[in-house]
Image (cartoon, rainbow, N blue to C red; front, side, top):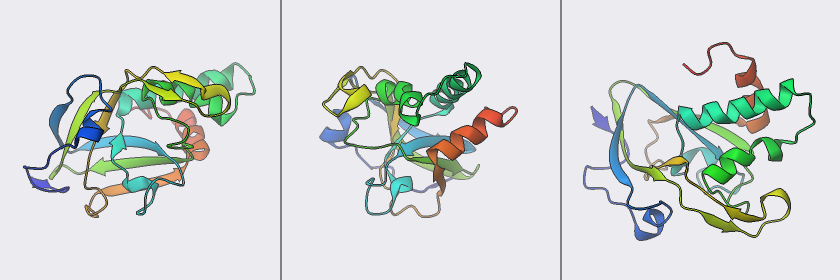
Length: 175
């Protein structure tokens, strides 16, 4: 197996470790695997898809369920309302990301990444509107450094509203 984002000695910084409740678990993520991220247009020099913060299929299932519920209830929810659960569970401040891009990282069977997994720490968000106040966190997040230079990692992106609409209409999308 090939580690794509550095060596086995890669470490987490104090600032990043401080975004977890307690001490995050160091993990070696092996393929086949998919992880996801909702990123904004200001998410780094390499583009939003190469950021370090990711979530798994369980969080994606909750997000897609929110989309389905909004669709079937006939309510006129905005994208901002639909993404509220993900923003609060992962404690993503509105100043950090507008969540305009849906990104998918795919590892093949022979690929590995080193990262950290744990519960998101609560964050205060003084942004405007719906997200103002405390974001409680508690959702499982992954910190995976080195994706800017790990160009062999397959990462795709599309507008969030397009991705969520597609997922909500796709049978067996959770697989």
